[in-house]
Length: 284
Image (cartoon, rainbow, N blue to C red):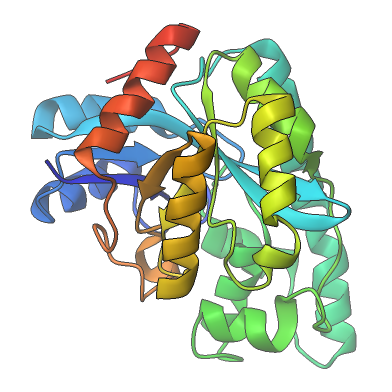
């Protein structure tokens, strides 16, 4: 059983439609995927319907933008009720923050000498409900300023780069509670990617488990080296966490993250489904 629990479609910052994503998952010999678009459930129903036709199970998921002391972190919610009012209102607030900083980003890039407009950004976003910084990167690619999205972030859009503008994100503890309120299971996404170990260290992770009921951590991820994977796996076992693996697939948005690049163990998947069922959420 091949299981990839972190994928993105064009509904946020991936490059495949939900249906195309499921077809590519089938071609990659995956049995189960979770669609975890950024701050929206907008593509889940289409992906699940495609999965029924194609023969791939699709778990309802979301990757929620959160923060700890002003530092960005991401929280995966699995099995949530996508129509939960409180969670839906907060996701809408996050998306508003995403989209309404973009004109400021474009203005800063113009000041830095790059000719770019919101029409350019909207053109590459193609009506995605969750429009954000990656789409600015795609617009820079389309204009020929950079070779790919990674270069756009490295040169212009990362936190210390000329085009960066801060946005709203949910405090992580509140995000966990909102996922739980929507009958979902909360899993920290790529906790030690890049400089994440400075934000989510071992004592803080233990606090999230004990005080807020965090259920899981993403261990096997393209941005985790072998040392991070080993330490997170052992720590997760000690804390009783579900330890997942995934590709964080974005289509052409992240060229080094092919579907199935990392997988979730069958035993971990069964544990995750059990936890979702106990919360009354949507298992597969």
